[in-house]
Image (cartoon, rainbow, N blue to C red; front, top):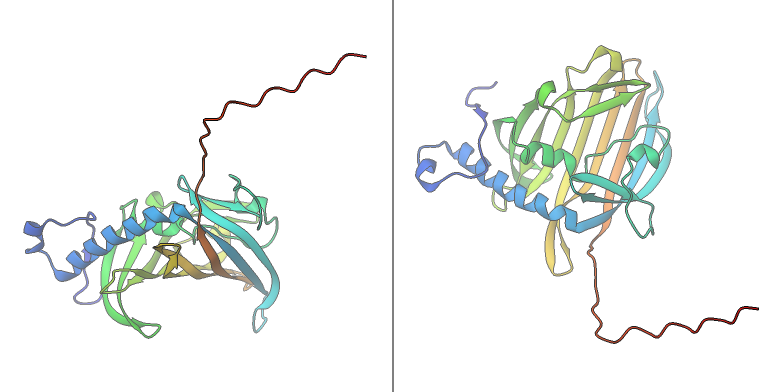
Length: 264
């Protein structure tokens, strides 16, 4: 831990009386967590088109080669990321592997990663400082989630494990909007055969209808095996829209039933 950094574990609210005795970094983080929880509460109101471009790199190869492109509708309902084929009339409670049967896939970028970090509230944060992110001012905090508190599961060639994670997040110091969230595997079990697992998600506030929503804009997953083979998924979230149910009430009498046909 660098000089001046300290562990932060706090609730999402800070009372005015207590705020006077707290470091500015702690107060700012509390305000951000309160804001991001409000934003995440609105995510289930929206659905987006998820376009996933997949790439692979063989052992000792110089770069990634395109594999395929997959498009799915995605939403977050009751704490789950639900998927549907583009144009489908409803979402299905199926995991990503039900739609994509081979290659590297990952979920969580639309809402779950942020929810587990900022809403579950079991994470210690370390203030890193102010930085410039993509040309704009940002505040950075680092974090680590121990394996026994983690909800991150990885399945690789028959092996499965819940892993510890670590990473960083950045938010705007004025609007308190989440800008970017990084998640990396930490001390991954040897049985998984992985050298690296990294997910990076970028967020942007979008105007949809008469409201604004903070939603993921793009994400990138890189998974590197101990052998040197690697997978890279580049994901874009677009065509986001608000959805809901509609109902109608009619006071007209029900239609008369059709007369029965005579039996032959």
